[in-house]
Amino acid sequence: TQLLEQSPQFLSIQEGENLTVYCNSSSVFSSLQWYRQEPGEGPVLLVTVVTGGEVKKLKRLTFQFGDARKDSSLHITAAQPGDTGLYLCAGHRGKLIFGQGTELSVKP
Amino acid sequence: GAVVSQHPSWVICKSGTSVKIECRSLDFQATTMFWYRQFPKKSLMLMATSNEGSKATYEQGVEKDKFLINHASLTLSTLTVTSAHPEDSSFYICSAKLQGARTEAFFGQGTRLTVV
Image (cartoon, rainbow over all chains, first blue to last red; front, top):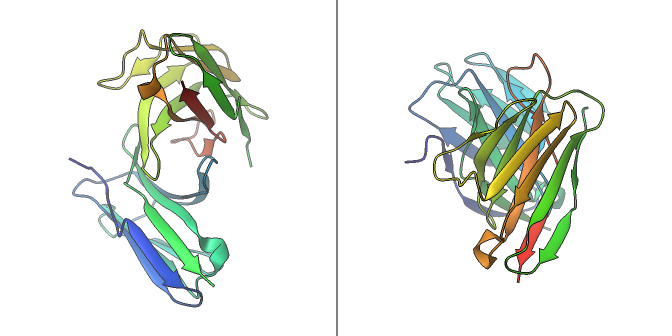
């Protein structure tokens, strides 16, 4: 059973489109992190959300932590080919627990 | 931000041999480091938690005699895959936690292990 359900697992869109990736759980997390990973590289931290209801923006990326701290979303506005990669959410419960990942492909 | 360096980036070895992978925190001290395994286009699976000066804590299903972890200093943890077999081929990634931080945030660049 996956503690953190990430969806969709695959997403292929055209440049300029918007998208949202979801990370859901029935468990509460003290914090939740979003990472981006390129092939052959380690994950790079994008953001950490800690407070229920928190919203953080990173240029065209908007991250939201659910009020109950059980879920999170990543919204990308006007996606670009450079956004292509594997996006991972990870919740902290004594250790980091990763979602399955979302493979995003943005075509020019 | 803090930097975690992993070495080597890739390695090819013969079945039955052992391979050592190093994970270094370059500009901070890490009392705790983590080792993950990742299959192609899949998520990271925590293998073990490496604690400086004490034994590593292994996740369920991970053979501690096969994946030897040593965390001899505050900046270095090593993972040795002993008697490697083709099924051990994978992408291994380490991460490190800043002292006092609630969770780790800094990952190494990963090591691609291929056992032939």
